[in-house]
Length: 332
Image 1 (cartoon, rainbow, N blue to C red):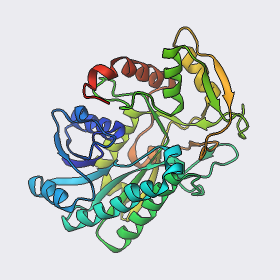
Image 2: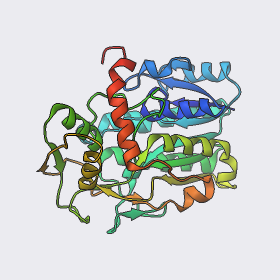
Image 3: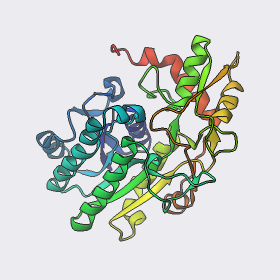
């Protein structure tokens, strides 16, 4: 089996590529390296360029006519950045994705596995959502993912395209073999900020303490990136059976357990020394209380459940942080 992975030099895409290689699936990577890393493509079939470049995708399919499906991971993903620059987010995440689909259809590739996001959901009072929960994204980034899902579903209804959207909750960790991990040195998510605070000996800022959660801090479903990669492999292996005649379907990928920011800090401090101190700060633009997912659909259709714990993800993130600069040798 051979798959095209757009954004395959990024955090999620490169980890999916590693999982594919480990299970006998050949990945072909397209990435413009705006946020991806060339080092993550070493030893892999790689085309540098844009997903909206029809000539490039024609070349990929001409040289790899046996591609069975596309895993679409290419996207801009930072919530605060999407608030300050929404035009760029809609152009890159939505307009370029539409062009990509046009090129896929022209080349006769009709299976699309889309990297979507839990950022599309309106959190319920208890924080638990499933695939039928209301879609009310609170940031331009989240809206681009919701728009893409609807756009792909509309295209699938009128063409041979078939789409499975995997709605990620909050990825943490790294490839356990440390081939790939989060490519940015100073990530903006909570665990990245915790690692940065620990390294620098400064306090960690809890941004938002008045959310309707059990301790007032935001709640997230932290899922190990290697578990996410395994879910992609499962979806690729059973793509047609998962759809079962449907043209488009969404599946949530998470642990099924919510972790508040305060609880994340406690878990982090249980595996590091000295512990990180905490200060409280206001919410950031675009932030939401968050959510965690019910996992029935992923278990039923993919035979998948997350197998790594929160502390596994923290430990692997810490291991990756120690080797990141040695693996990513090109200048940041």
